[in-house]
Image 1 (cartoon, rainbow, N blue to C red):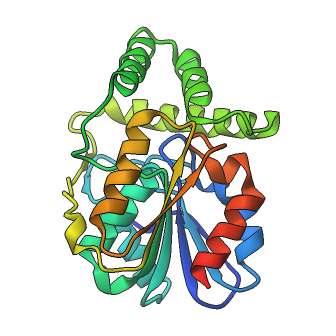
Image 2 (cartoon, rainbow, N blue to C red):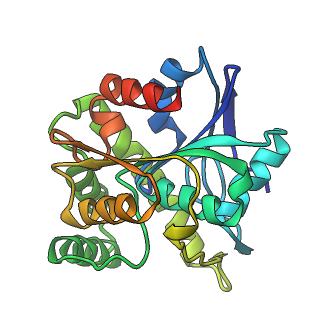
Length: 250
């Protein structure tokens, strides 16, 4: 299956991988900023946006590589937000020859110890979903993951993206057998691409810990701490993040 995607601009290829509360619509400002100088590819990962979640075994990282093959892109910079950052790292260790560089915005990663605050979010989201209060779970995500700089329009966009993701993923949960994602354990010592890690000063503490761990563990990685940012800085202050990405990609 080829991921639903947009492919705009020309120049060095950049792939934008969305967070787990969003879909490819989160990157509109980044596409506008980068497409004049880059070929910008933004997919919807499985179960998000316009990409379905069929009942089969799959790999998020392999899906990204298959999209690069489909578009005849040999190497690309990969920008990943949160869950998309985890997928970017999975691509970097399973197909390193395809990754020119990595920009990881508040990335997720397995194996970093959780925190009470992160556990409390997971427990409350589970409670809301198990009770059928999907709208409540959507509002919890909007309130948790967007920092105070996010506009009302941005909050509405994240609300819509998260609601759609829940709709698709909860329906897939009812299938027997359902979809099964292949687990990829990331050894950060194997990441060889130039790497920028961004951390939000107002983000959930667990994700600040992840960003620090990735920056400490990837050779030569640069850590950029944004004191004003929550978990989704590219949506909170797009212009500032666009400038940061343009400088790194140059």
